[in-house]
Length: 120
Image 1 (tube, rainbow, N blue to C red):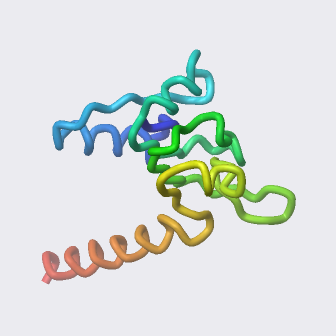
Image 2 (cartoon, rainbow, N blue to C red; image 1 turned 120 degrees about the vertical axis):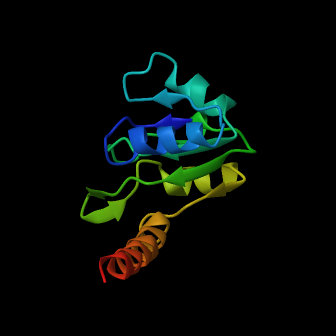
């Protein structure tokens, strides 16, 4: 399940996963049964742009949660998932900050190096 339909994360990620023959459900903040959709999922990628939108009630104990959101909330950076409430209730969760951000940076540099090689 992908929570978020932006042109930056939600839509491109859903297309990438579909190309790899994955079954993808795209939800958003106004999805009628968002809690049910995420609770049934094995993997949930969250990029909705709402700080601490999802708490432990949205996941099952085997969920793998990838929080792509980055928000300033009460003077601190946090994701779209309430990390402290979810941490011990799921199989795995990425922290914010420090989760997917460093991976994004590595792939940005890799792609730039590849591009430079093509330009020469």
